[in-house]
Length: 119
Image 1 (tube, rainbow, N blue to C red):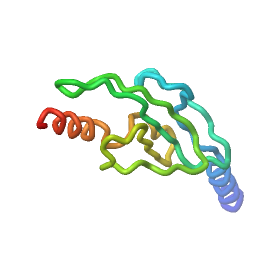
Image 2 (spheres, helix red, strand yellow):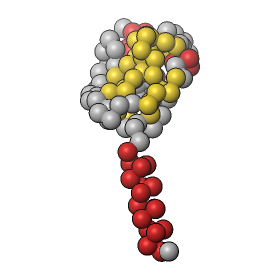
Image 3 (tube, rainbow, N blue to C red):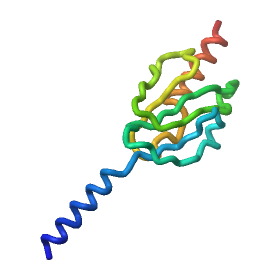
Image 4 (cartoon, helix red, strand yellow):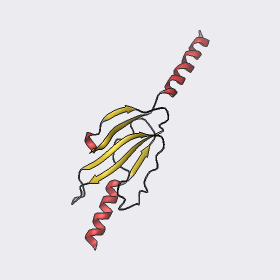
């Protein structure tokens, strides 16, 4: 009986490992809060990718964020200090991890706005 249980548990672990990554996806630039479609990625996909297209900013430095989200075979995140980058990318590697915009987006928006006001 114990041997059967061990085989069953080993089989369940293998099935769990074979499941594909799940990411939020919206292929066209969409408001961040509206991008809620869950997709099962292909076996080749290793990351969830988010690309930021626009930020409506102004005092107090909050605004609408437009993004696209997808599954990706490879993903190279943007430099978090890359102020002024036109479409920053962020990458993550666990199920449904791409819930927000690119990492450090609000801090970068604040820095750009502050620098503009300072000059």
